[in-house]
Amino acid sequence: MFSHIMVGANDIEASKKFYDAVLGALGIGPGTQDDKGRVFYMTPKGIFAISKPINGKPACAANGGTIGFAVESAEQGDAWHAAGVANGGTTCEDPPGVRTSPMGSMYLAYLRDPAGNKICALKRL
Image (cartoon, rainbow, N blue to C red; front, side):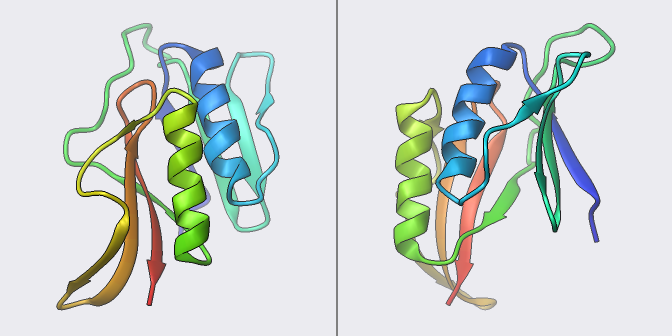
């Protein structure tokens, strides 16, 4: 459904370090920076990118927005979460683990990146 997702970053270097770590935990290689300073993480299924806002204003988190990354296991999700915390992210929501809702059981782990964007790792069980 999506071709790409791009989030704003105030400090590209700090955000690249963070996303290199969390996406690296999912088997995705380091981001590639273009001549405009944007960083792209390319996969066969889509593209994730970080960029300073083009309007010159500070990046800010989307209130109510979350970007989810698929993980293959709870262990991979735990590694993703640990990599994020160790590289400038902050944990948010409940601790990583299994949650059950009317949509079924899921492993979930949540982080905020250095710019405050909320991301999660998800595995449907």
